[in-house]
Length: 336
Image (tube, rainbow, N blue to C red; front, side, top):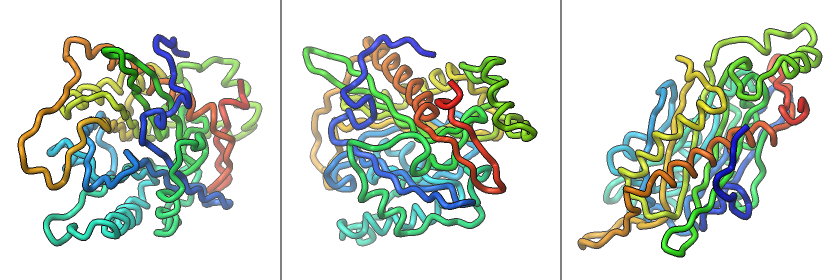
């Protein structure tokens, strides 16, 4: 499936990067199979102390909010929210309310850039119902912890991957530089791919699926028209340009699991560093520590390995879900 060259962190998740926490709110009720996932970049005020960040839009079939300013300024100033496509507006509005609560300067001198990313869970979820509400978004943020669930939870509840059950997956890799240990963590919202392209595809796997789905074989077919959101986080001192280079390598991890980047797939990677935070009121010049460029291949390798495992973990941790119109996505774990 993948070959580990680097050691996973203690939790083998994005929360191995110090300060990062993740929270979910899951809606699981018949046709309603959706939710929200929140990633808090650090435990302070993200508006006052912004993380350096970059974004790579691999295939832009998506309806995210906030990517343009991240690309321009190279900064992340709010938590990151993940949800379904038609709940982006609710999530963005709620995230603004959350930021206004503790930052009186927002609106008085400049505004705030809410960051919300999405995938379409309309196969398993009644997406037209727009069931994610303001209180659900607040709950996801407030539930944030270093010990969080993966699979069919939060934003991942209604997602599919390679026509199996997808969702939230995470992993991490550790590396040392000058005697100091650093972490590269990854979190994905997987909702992409065709079964025949999956790196673990086999006739045996397809046969097991056919047995479970009986006459509903159409559930295994169709184009690669989902999406994936990939988040890379690290405490390495990378600048925005280096993070952009890191985000570009996410396509390697995605391709290794089998994605063909279909025309209807929105494939986006956001990378950020918790080192060298930028103070909102910063005025004086300062010095910035930066990772050496001629050694950055090690960082690329670690990020690719973390993302690849995070994608597989999103499937191995997911439970089978039956939802909207009795559609079903089966857990990879159950099959193997």
